[in-house]
Image 1 (cartoon, helix red, strand yellow):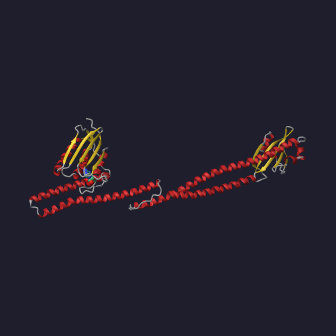
Image 2: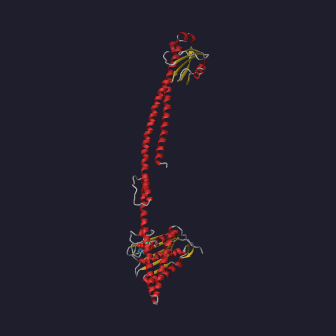
Image 3: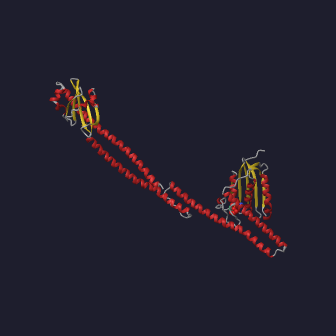
Length: 464
Ligand code: ADP
C-alpha cells in the first residue's frame, strides 16, 4: 500500500528541492557574472591607463624600440600577463616569455588589430585554469602601432565563486532537510486522524457501532468523523427499529394464530354443535384473512424497500375510487359508531395515476383514522382540485399525535406507543407511493384533538 504520508512528504521535498535548486542556480550565475565583470573592469582600467601612458610618453620611438628599451615603464602596474603585438599580429613581447604565433587568431586580439577593445574568456595550453584576456589598440601620434593584451587567470575568482557556491549548496541541503522534517510533521497531522478514523471504521465494519471517532479539528477529516459517528448512530437506531419490528410482527402474527389454534382445539372436541362449529369456522376464516392481509402487507413492504414496485399508470376516475373506499369502510364506521363522511367536488377530472395504489394509500390512512378515533368521533374524507393539484384530505377527531412523535411517524417501522399501533409500515409505504406519483403526504395533528393527513398530487389531467 502506498501511504498518503509518504506521498505528501515526497511532494513537499520534491517542490522544495526544485525551488531551492532554481534559486541557487540563479544566485550563483549572478555572482559569477558580478565577479567576472569586476575583474574585467579592473583589467580594462589598467589596460587603458597603460595604453594612454604609452601614447603620451613613448610616441617618439617605434614599438619595437620601445619594447626593447622602455618596456617596463608603461605596463608595470598590472599583475596580469602582458603581451605586446605589432600590427602584423606578431608577438613582440610576452611577460611570461610565451611567444605564440597563434595569438593573432584570438578573438580579442583580432578586434584590437581592427581598432576595437576586445575580450575573450577561454582555456590556454599553459594553464589548467581558464583565463580572461583583454586587448586594446596602442597608439602613437594618433596612429595605431600595435596591440596591448592583458591576460588574467580566473583561478582566484573561480575559487571564490566555488566557495560561495558550496555555502549555498550546504544551505540548500539544510533547508531541504528542515522542510523534509516539517513535511513529515505536517503529513502526520493529516494522516494520524485518518488512521484513527480508519481503525474505528474497521471496528464498525465488524459490527461494533457503539465505538465513536474523536473529532480533532473542524475540517474535512472532522466532517468525515462526524459523518461516521452519525452513520453508526443511524445504524444502531435502524437495528433497534428492525428488532422492534420483528418482535411486533411476530406478536401480530401470533394473535390470530392463537385464536385459530384455540378454535381448532375446541372444534376437535365438539364438532357436533352446529352453532359452535359455524362460529368457530367463521372466526378461523376471519383470522386467516387477517393473517394473509398482514403477510400481503409485509411482502409489499419488502418489495418497496428493494425498489421493485412500479406504478401501473392509466386514466383514473377519482370519484370511483372515493366511492369504492367509502363503500368498503361504511360497515366499519357503523360498527365502531364513527361518523364517516365523504366530500368531493364535482369537477374532479380524470387523472393519470395508479388506481390500486391510490386505494391502498387511502385505506391505509383511513385505517389509522379508524383505529385512533373513539366511538362518536368523526372521520372526513375530502377531495378537491386546487389549481394544478389534486388535494385529498383525511381528517379525524381521534387521539392525535404528540409533537415529538409527529416527525417520526412516516419513518419505516416507526409505530406509536399506543396498543392500537400495528407494524409501523403503513404510513411509510403510503408516503413512498405518493412520492413515486410525484406528490406529497403531510400530516398535522394535535394531541387529544385529532389528525389531518393531506395528500397533494400533481394534476396530469386526461384530455377527453
Ligand atoms: P401502524 O401499522 O402502527 O399503524 P403507520 O405507519 O400507519 O403504522 O403509523 C405509524 C404511527 O403513527 C402509528 O403507530 C400511530 O402511533 C401514529 N398514527 C398514524 N395515524 C394516526 C392517526 N390518525 N391518529 C393518531 N395516531 C396516528
